[in-house]
Image 1 (spheres, rainbow, N blue to C red):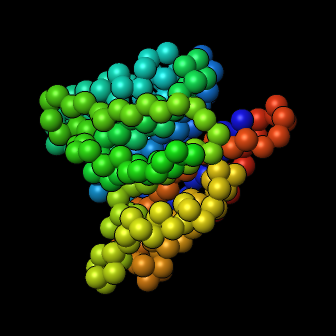
Image 2: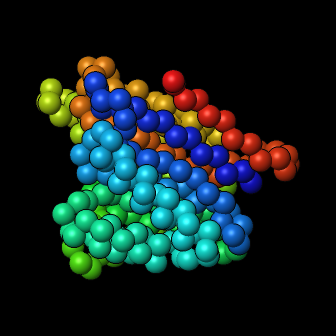
Image 3: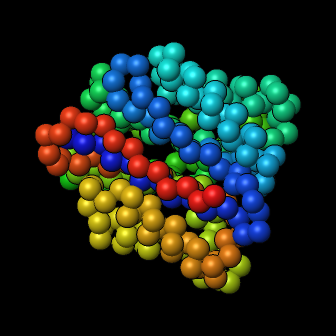
Length: 233
């Protein structure tokens, strides 16, 4: 099986720096973790927060800390340094090869979409951003590692797309994109969701937008690891 990850993101219109941060790290016991964070607000201040939190999460994962504990520790860190006055969303999606599971840790109001060979569903149990309350726990979901799985998460710039024109993005539209693609199309799923959101905002995103897609594909026996990046400058 192959882990395939697609990431697509764009800044808020007329803002040079995105307040969202997405990063990947290999797990010390095998596998990979994808972390996506959205700092409060937009611009440089939000970017400093999200980058700092993702960096803290990566460091803890590399130390062998479990994802649920990582999310709680990152929350405690933000709460301590900002006194409960700054919030952020934080989602971690991990393929853990030591347990042969996919672990989803969620702190934010937006759902996570899961499609497997057996079912498709939204993880939408109430979950608050980190940083505002003294005690905070992530919502954790663990599913078997199996071919054909597609997992989609995003920041709130996606879920609020089109709101100002009363044509807000719907979960049905996102499911349609997922259903029209397969587990080998992680990047196309991310690109298509981002494109839809930007179009609903009339080509001028009203917030930072980031999409993270993780898929388990069954293609090939190639053991090489590859990473592709496209970054405007």
